[in-house]
Amino acid sequence: MIDKIVETVEEVVPSALAPYLIPILIITLFLVIGYVLVLVINRYVVKWTKKTKLGTLIIGTIKAPLILIFAIIGIRTVLHYIAIPPRIVVYVDAVMFVLIVLVATFCVAKILVGLTEYYAKKYKGTKPIAPIIQKAVRLVIFLIGLLIIFDALGISITPLLTTLGVAGIAIALALQETLSNFFAGFYIMADRPIRVDDYIKLDTGEEGYVTDIGWRSTKIRSLPNNIIVIPNQKLTKAVITNYYLPEQEMACLVQVGVSYDSDLEEVEKVTIDVAKKVLKKVVGGVEDFEPFIRYHTFSDFSINFTVILRVREYVDKYLVTHEFVKELHRRYEEEGIVIPYPIRTVYMKEQSM
Image (cartoon, rainbow, N blue to C red; front, top):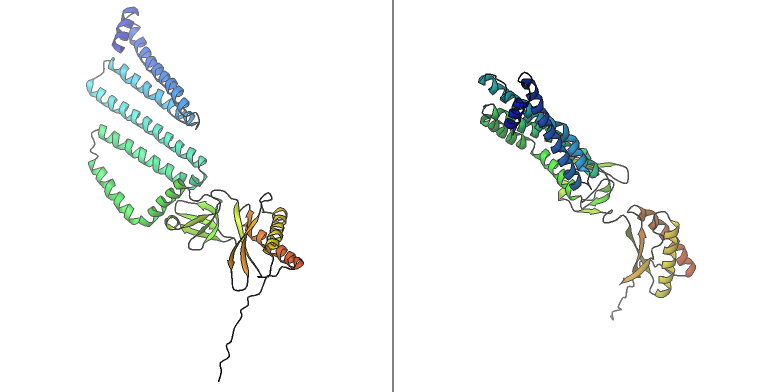
């Protein structure tokens, strides 16, 4: 195609102008091809990524580099039609190839870093390790680009790959614990068993609000306002109760016992009435929830039952339970309902002499 254009220009244009006009036309042609390709990619990429808005990121990143690559190809094509010594052409080809690889490397690195930043903003928990991932991505991409350039220039990359492999193994062994925590942090952020601001409790007893999920450890703020630092590797092996999943609202269970002489229907009526008032009055109670009770045990000195209330989040249960116990004790005294002390009846058999 280029040859036909050159032949046509040489036939139409005066021979004195052809050497100047042909390079301009060739470079312009490649620039137009690059620009059209950008428009095509823009149309389809933006359409496919419309919901995530990643198309804008990709197009904004590749637009200038893609046109620059086609400009370099155009310049190389122009040099083909200029009478220059073959030994110089070899060096020119090498320089052009290095430029194209460098532009492509910067382009790919920028896209991947942009994607990392996008998902770090989308998933709040990944934000702490985003800078580390971005640096690692840049390092890997530039290393690959450098290896491609060395290979194209005839420089053997086998010793370099061997050195990198040995160094990688040595680093992995030296940083085994750190890397374990690092990848455990990735798992936590991907699986999301916990999130920042969740209230959790571990099987080892630690509990509190998650304040930070880092690349090495996770920090929990306990109710006494102390920070508990847990290595990510240990966190992934722990049994976790997340009081914010699937939602923050939760049941609040209060255990109560009344004497065997009590009217259980009356006890149920009074207890539910107290529970309703407490849920409406106390901050943290779910006002529209219908509390209920369930009898479950004939114990040594009382009939025991569970009162089911509902609170807006885990820590609200403390105040709601506090107010409920006070109010229930007062009402039981007014209604003559007895909460018995622990008692035990001992029968002694008299033995005849």
